[in-house]
Image (cartoon, rainbow, N blue to C red; front, side):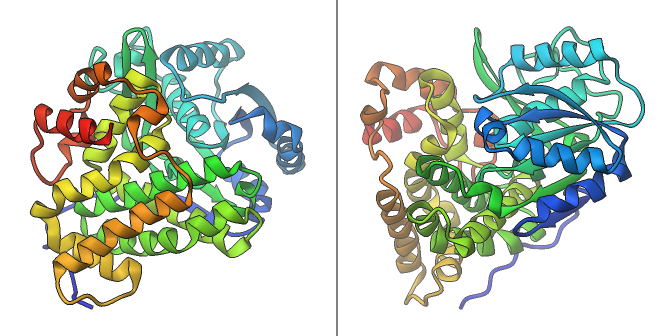
Length: 397
């Protein structure tokens, strides 16, 4: 297999202070929390977790360790500005004191909400979290350290348990932007693949495709770094091999472990290596058309691979050879095989192939294209014009 290496230049690398990974490892949460605080404010990702008894189980473990458990909220959608502001007010009304921390149990939405609230709880220069979001607020920066965050993901996709931003949306005005600061990175990530078993197949599919897109885009990003370059190919290998199995057989332990690890690696990689075109357009699809993020990534990844192969063909060929564990006669054949594998996986997961199938109208296309040029798009390895994005979207229609 042809080797690939990024030229060594100065870089920064951030991860959670501690990562605990493994089937059933949530049992270790009670051992970790006393190291960071004495009272936890809990953000949950869905009422299903409550009905399944997961919250009761974790509460018993936490309180047995002498930690005070304070439930804050449940969120079942991508967090909005009003969600962050409302929960922050709730937390401030209770009163924040030394030894407090946030515990997020759920998917990316719950973890993002917890990270944003943790930051706003200790920073009051602005009137709203919007004042701190990239490119839409007042450009305020965090002057005080956020409350510590412990993350327990229950989906395998976003990797938010290992990222240094919180993605927050708004309906009026419409946007999806990040609160970004190294200090919102969770201090501890407890990644228990067993918690993903009860996710619906559709969530397994779209979250998995989000992880795959993050692994690919962080590898080819113009901000790519040496450590993510080592991690992303292995994460992609796991995801391409096991996602369809996790989708078909939710109780398959090896598949669930592989996908949880791939998602974790994808978060580490995007936090340190950036993203690209697929995520840029996916964000705009979410804002303009309300398309779930993972589904949008699944639809756009093949187009992003084709668009970028002229600039990073060698890198994509390396990914193809490594992730598919095959040799190919030349780089073009390896890239073709990678694109084909992604498209076949998308079909195996029974995901929509065309924008018209998910409620996107042709009239939305110019607005989606115009909204695609945020932080993610700035990491794309080649320049893409708004007109080119419109053409890509029309070809997907």
